[in-house]
Length: 98
Image (tube, rainbow, N blue to C red; front, side, top):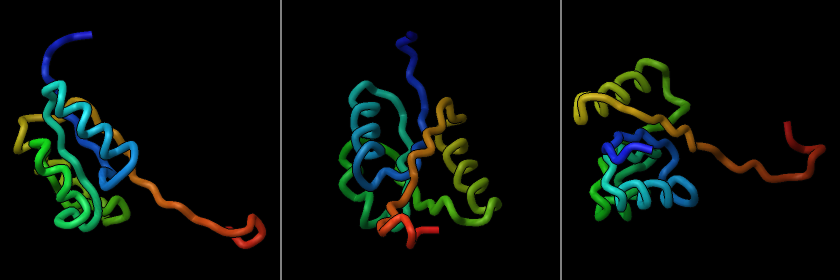
């Protein structure tokens, strides 16, 4: 493994694995673009890490996703690793789920 700083683009950073991943990567000195829906409120707790915070809904049209990724490239000159961590929970009886 190299000690060279990497730039990460991570979706779904409001809690859980995404949040912890951002914190660990920033502690080791890597650049991180933390994304999520309602970023102003749901990702505010990550601002103190030094991560770049971007609003991103992974269900948005492809053009919008491309523009957000380009924004990250413009900030850091490139992205080394993409972590698609975004998801949602669907609860119910198996017969009720589609």
